Image (cartoon, rainbow, N blue to C red):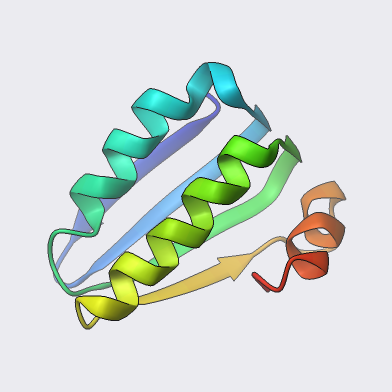
Length: 93
């Protein structure tokens, strides 16, 4: 999987690596859904992510909305890597 997730004490961290695409959408969605069940701050580290397709972007938008609705907060860090331009273009950074 091109991502890892760890959670605890009102915070969580998700690290994206490589390309996150449609082939990872179902397990990625399940992990994000589990993290959104409790109000927490979730930091997504996309500095090592080399690409995101439209399914991954859609999941990130929905995840941000779910966190906001449940009293949580999404923080995205893409550094200056390839994912930064895409995430910035769509207003996720």
